[in-house]
Every structure is written in C-alpha cells, then in structure tokens.
Length: 142
Image (cartoon, rainbow, N blue to C red; front, top):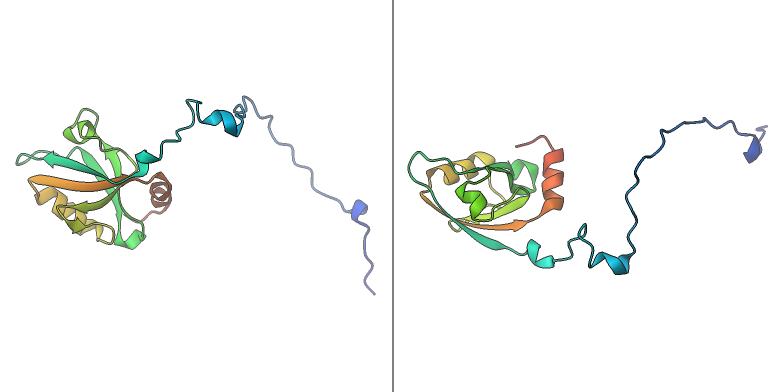
C-alpha cells in the first residue's frame, strides 16, 4: 500500500536568488495618466501615411523584417537617423500595411524588398504595433 507523506515533511529544494537592486517604483493606476513613463495616447497606434521619394541609387533609410513565413507581417526593424524615412516619422516597430496600394500584410519578404527597392515614390501605410514586432523579433524567420 502507498504511504502518503504529510505535506510538511516534503523536502523542497532551496534556491538562493540574488537580491533585487533598484526595483522600479510602483505607480498607482490613477497617477499613471500623468506620469512620463506611461504613454496613454492611443493615437500612436492608428494607421498613418508615410510618403518617401527615392532618387535612383539612393538608400531607403530603413530596414524591414518579417513576411508571409512569419505570419505576422512586415515590420520596420531599423530607421537610419536623419534619413528621409526618419524625418517622415517612420520608426522601429511600425508594421507596413501597404506600399503604393499593394497589401503588405500577407506578402513574401523578398517581394516586399523588391517593391520597396524598385519604387521611386513610396506611399506607405504603417501603424505602430510593438507587440507583434516583439513577437516578430523573437522568431528567426525573416
């Protein structure tokens, strides 16, 4: 017959964790609306239009990652400081919704690169979507 060991008699492993230095200050929810560490502005997540003109042989001023294989879309992964893309408001974490009226939400990465590199004028619909961008970064598929 199985003998049951009383709960108090179990031998639990002991784990020593390093002390937690400088924990972040807790801010009550009612004070977060005015706190600089919290951005409660929902307008930052609304789709916006970016217009870029690219002379022949010029760089775009940004990099993309993702595509159909990741099932999360195309995202801006880097924006060159002081580039036209940066001045137009493009930022890391923006999801590219469309370029010149071509839907980018379910497009192969290589096709997206081809469209962006060959276009002289780029009319881009983007939205800031940091949650899916972070998920995209955690996946190794480009």
